[in-house]
Length: 68
Image 1 (tube, rainbow, N blue to C red):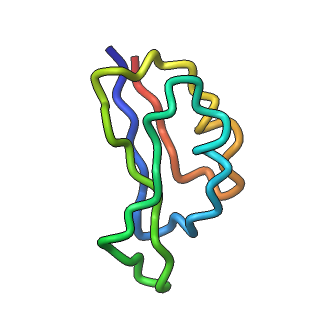
Image 2: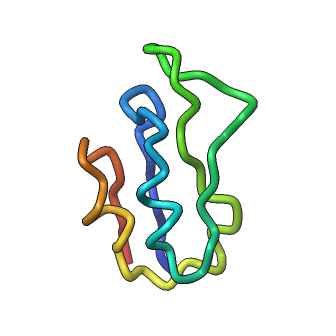
Image 3: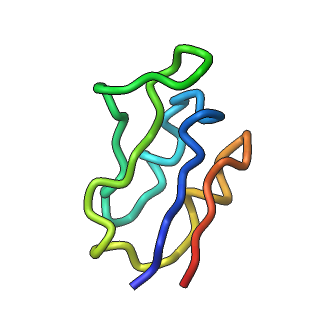
């Protein structure tokens, strides 16, 4: 199992990571806001993550890290 960490204070909610996730386990957290007022991305089912790191690769602000 892999571990995905998203820096929610720097995430601007662009949704690019959502589109590339093959397991569809990333969504926008509609219940919280970053310091800049954006709704950040979140991983909904960490146990299903395969560690492909597509989300980290596509993130324009490099706020996602994936650990295997």
